[in-house]
Amino acid sequence: MKKQTKIFFGFVACLLLIFTFTDLQISEMLYNPKSTFGWFFESFGEVIIALIGCFSTVGMIRTSGKKWSVGNILLGTLFLFDTFMASFLIRHYLKLPTFAMGLLGICCVIIFPLIGFNIQPADFEVVRRIAKAGVVISLAPILIVTLVKMLWGRQRFRSMLDPAAEFTPWYVINGFTTNDDFMSFPSGHSANSATIIWITWLPLWLERLKGRETLLSLISGIWIICVMLSRVIMGAHFASDVLMGAAIVLFLNMYLKKKWYPSIELGTH
Image (cartoon, rainbow, N blue to C red; front, side):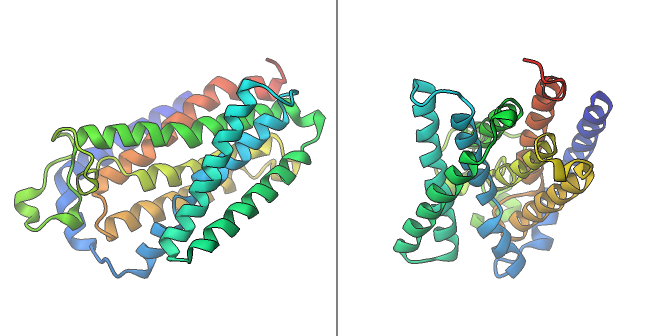
């Protein structure tokens, strides 16, 4: 794990260095707001974070051993938030009627508790660790990325009238803002899509997925790259924005695996 972490850090650093000098040129070359590819991954790319949150909160409640507690009430509230977010994102990007959001929410409220109810007591310990990682991975990116966005104040490519004059490199902190046109760095879509890496925890619990860790990592990588590329195509972000958005989540996932993987595999606390 330590070697993989060093390689990944080095890879991200090299890409960031390249994008430092090529951000604007890449965006000018790829920008196409009418792209079907860009629209698809804009619409569905970040929904995964809410679905992971829904499962993980239900998993934490199911394996807590308590019917009512302050922790479970907070988790239940977070579950409702994730349900709302999943329903809202799908309805918003697909421009569905308002009632569709309610139907999607009802589906989440039915499906995820049913999944939680079917978790067997023998699996409680491993599922609780996996679910705890899911809660962290689905919550931390929203908080971290939103805060950095507001502090950085980097303008989005698609909102620029004169890119050559308005462009600023990723390392320039432009000042606090709540204007979405100036919240380009880092990419929230890329961070949210990168939470799909959480599926690489599932082989610890699901027997049929054991031995397929590489496949799950490949699926995750393809999904993340597609979302990253789509954000640049749509002009919502620069290459450095999407790189750092995804990197935040992937670094977090590596840290959690280093901290919790050994204890899960050994069945210890």
